[in-house]
Length: 174
Image 1: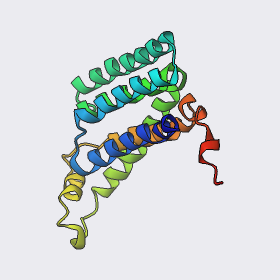
Image 2: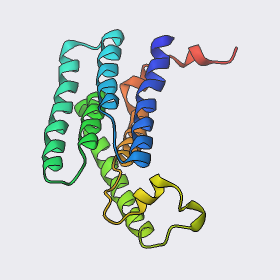
Image 3: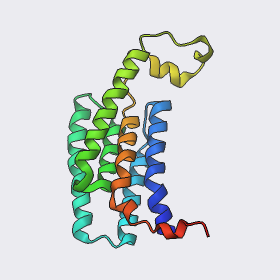
Image 4: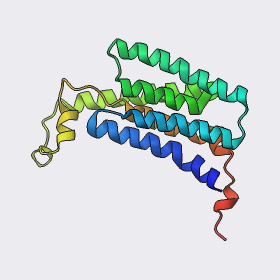
């Protein structure tokens, strides 16, 4: 049952934290990416995932990390975004990787368009004291892409073996 609770909460909670952190501070701590990677490894081992499957998931994370850091060096995304995307790819492996990247891209495009439009309007006086909102509104500010990465991840996560392995009988009301 504890393993099922971990499957249901660990990844979603860390991705939600990454999104909130990026929204409010425009940064994602390395601790979030490390917790995602460590959580994957622990749950993979406790779930009985085979060595080949673990290495395949690590390969997916490595591919995303390589491409994401190339994007980082070009100034297209932040370093935290690159690390979170790679850490999420660990959880999805190659089986769900393309769907994750597609959803993250679509949500990222929508987020970018919304923020560009938001930045055209003045900040309402009532909200002018909110530092995080002023940072988000600043035209020279970037896009907190961690939000799109998290929404994309949370969209795909229910389709993964992590959730399919949960024994819902443990959670039935008796």
